[in-house]
Image 1 (tube, rainbow, N blue to C red):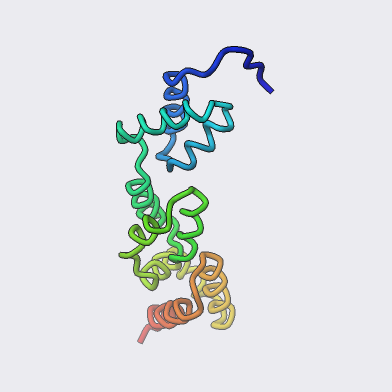
Image 2 (image 1 turned 180 degrees about the vertical axis):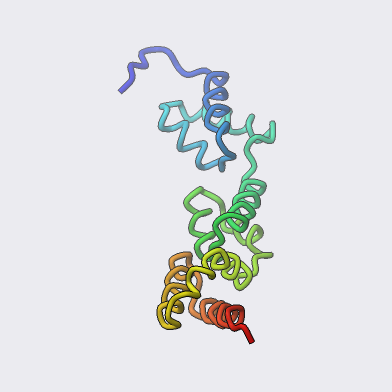
Amino acid sequence: MKNHSSTETSPVKAYNICLRFLAPRPRSVAEMRRHLIKKEISVPVIDETLQKLMEDRLLDDVAFARMFVESRERHKPRSKFALTCELRQKGIKDGIIEMSLEDIDEEASAWNAVQPRLRAWQQLAPEKFKKKLFNYLQYRGFGYEVCLTTWDNAKAASDPH
C-alpha cells in the first residue's frame, strides 16, 4: 500500500490519470470511477474529476454505449442479452442500454456472426454443421429461435439449387 501521509492527489493529477486511461479506448463513467478508486484517489477528487471529464465530453455513457454496440455489431456480433450483460458490467444504466439496443436486429446479427465460418462448416455433415452453428450462436447469447432461423438461412445459402 502506498504511503499517503499528507499528500492528497490533486484534481489535475487525477484528470491526467483519466486521460491516460482513456487513451486506448473510450470508457464508461463507472469504469473510470473504479479505476480512480484503485489508484486510491479520494471520493471528492473523483467526483470533481468525473464531472470535469463529462463537461469536457470525454466521458458520456450514452455515446459510449452506442459506440460499444456498433463496434460489437461490426466485429463480434452478439445477442441483445449478451450485449446487455457486457454493458451492465461496464456500469451502464438500464435505460441507456435499452436505448442503445433498440435498433439491433438479432437475426441479422446472428447471420453476420456465422457468415465468415459458413464455408468451412458447409464441408461438415449436416448434423455436425447444425451443431457447430447452434453452439457458436448460443455461446454469443442467441436464443433457440434465432439459431433455428440462422440454420435455415445457412442451409438455403449452401443449397446449390
